[in-house]
Image (tube, one colour):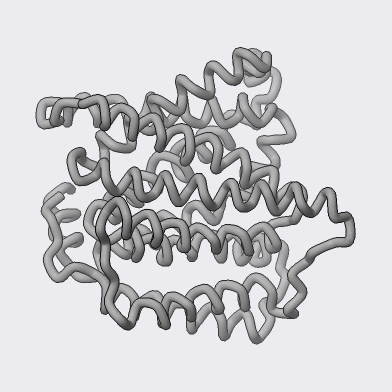
Amino acid sequence: MLNWLNRFLKHRYGAPACVLLAASLWGLDSLVRYPASQSLPLTGLVFLEHLIGLIVLTPFFLKSRHSMPPIRKRHLLAFLAVAAFGGILGNIANTRSIQILGPSTATLFLLLQPIGVLVLASIILKERASNRFLPISIWVVLNTLLIAFPDFNLGFRTDEAEMSQGILFGVIASTAWAVSTVTQKWLLRTYSPVQSVFFRFFFATILLGGMALAQGEFVFSELASNSDVLPRLLFLSIIIGVFPYWLYNVGLKRLPASLVTFIEAWYPIMGIFVPMFVSGTPLQGLQVFGGVTLIVSLALLVQFESPKKKDSF
């Protein structure tokens, strides 16, 4: 299995395909998270997601432990930052932004994440893009906006106080995920994807457990009285949690963070398309055009910005 994956990742489109598949799986999140959130409080739900993910990851981590470099203080701080910003702050802020603004309007502020990644990656990781990167990346953003808002209505309401809160949470989410992406890329220079994902879930579980305990949201007893929640929780933890996050790290280890953040733009697009497909809502012509040209622009970015040689798995 690992030999097959290693051969696949040596292909030019192998690592980008991992990120794209991860973003596609994350797009299924809204179908399962909303029903689950009706039965469990937010902090308790996210805590159980990470706890289950940690249990799933532990055997794989133990198998890779003999080859793991020592964890120094700067690595420990970086793992904590990834857990705090990517695992907790980003998720909670994005959820609140969606609750206030709605999924499509909240998507607008997720497009700020690539800007943050580009700035941080140039400063911290010393990444430098080609001259073709800027125009194609702008086209990616414009396509994403076209898919999210085919009628050119950004969905802003007149309640300025409420809108300000939604905008603030959206900016916080995009900034937190930008910090997490660049920090994760820095860690992947030293650690394998399995090790990196394990520590992200390990520290996030501890932090979320403390938050759940402080808020009185330990919800193990509620699982017994809500038998339909457990299958959704397992789906969130494994199919939308551990597996795609591992795929994402496999791709991030081999690609520049500035490229990955634009491939990741497929996630909010899937978050819009999937509910439309499930509800039977037809796509508008501009959305189809935007989807096709988004795929083309992402392929061009991968062609121009992917490293010519891939690391082994």
